[in-house]
Length: 111
Length: 108
Image (cartoon, rainbow over all chains, first blue to last red; front, side, top):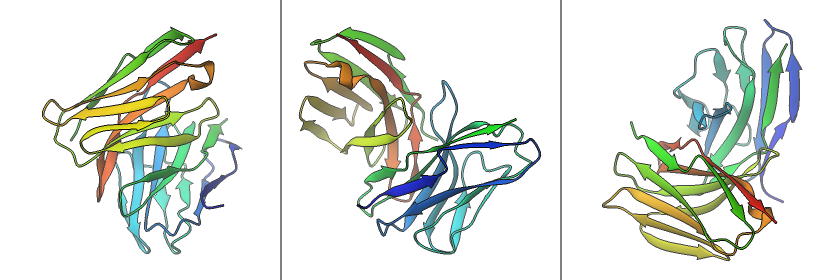
């Protein structure tokens, strides 16, 4: 089965700790994205990558970092600099024909 | 930057009703997407449109490029259609811009 996996589904961290969210895809897509979703708001773009070893900041990149060392993997680190990290995080990928695929999401709660 | 507006924000319908969700955007686009998000949070792509109309089962999506407007219709609605429906625009190397979503509840 091809798709995007995100782990874990729920994540709890203490304030001030960095945390890394996993995103893996076996769809052979070049383009991958990280979005943040807050109640009552649309999805907002954190970072995206069009190809391995390259990535760009989205609209709300401050306090986040990413890497793209492998085509299949696009992990997101939420650093202690992110002022309000509690949110639902979605990873996505895109085909060359603009079809969008989304992972199941990770709900991060900072205590 | 494109602005995407959806209406209504919330919608409650009786089972069997015909439902329409609207989406307007401010800047010309290459593609418009309709997405469905269930309570668990996962998102599924329903349609990608660049012109005209598409139909899949009881779902119909239309787009008017000149008016920068799209509609998602659900015929013979069912409680399992209850979800958040999200409109997004963009494509290619341009990241998507998302509307805030329309929360649909279909009551049996």
